[in-house]
Image (cartoon, rainbow, N blue to C red; front, top):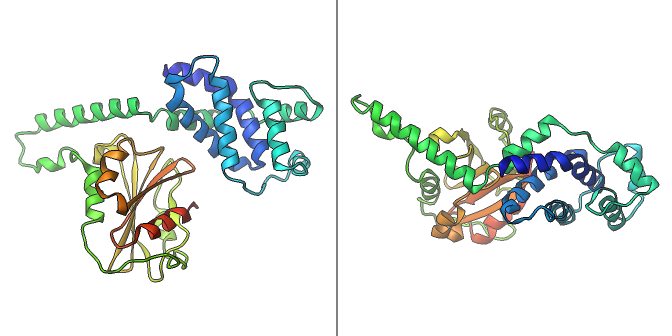
Length: 309
């Protein structure tokens, strides 16, 4: 099934990218949207029959494009020409040109010719993000646990701390509990998040991941980035890389846990502290916004302010 999906993506890549590129008039954003479409399509793949796959891909693409109306950034001749259309007219034209029921037109022929060529890097990114389905995560977790168990058995006779030989059973749940451990009388409510985040560039410059790290656009006065760390799957026992950002004013803390694609077992631990854990997903990065020191409304405001840098 995975190979069938990869073959299908290769077959529609140029048309799908053409739609996204000219519907958004933003080359950079269209690449992010391509990965997002692939990821959602991969999740729906088992329930789609062969005749519905192409329509589903373009329906997802159209929904994602319509969900956020950004100003155009491309400045080539075609972009300037398309910018003269209303947004609705441009989206309809792109669907008629690249979609499942394509129709020929003079402008459409020019768009088809100018559509971005297939890219190995784009294919790799699409496969990397879309194959993080529940099946892939379960398989990778089983392999990881099997390797860890074998390593622990091999070194059982050595005088070492066994906790260092294998990941904890619930690393992510423990991280959330730790972020909610300290009680505080300090809360931040509506309108409190007005100061821009600062002092984080140096720490974030050292973080290297395959996905975008999201940082709050606004924080209360006095908050700064205290720590930024990447945790690989072998550290956590999870099937994905995870980034932890801790913001503080030296008395209280705000924690952001981030991963590419999503958190497979989200409902298992968010339900424990639903009012202190907010889940968002932007541009392929899933983020848990965690703090006992902020009101539920303030956590939502922080989540809404997260933007890729």
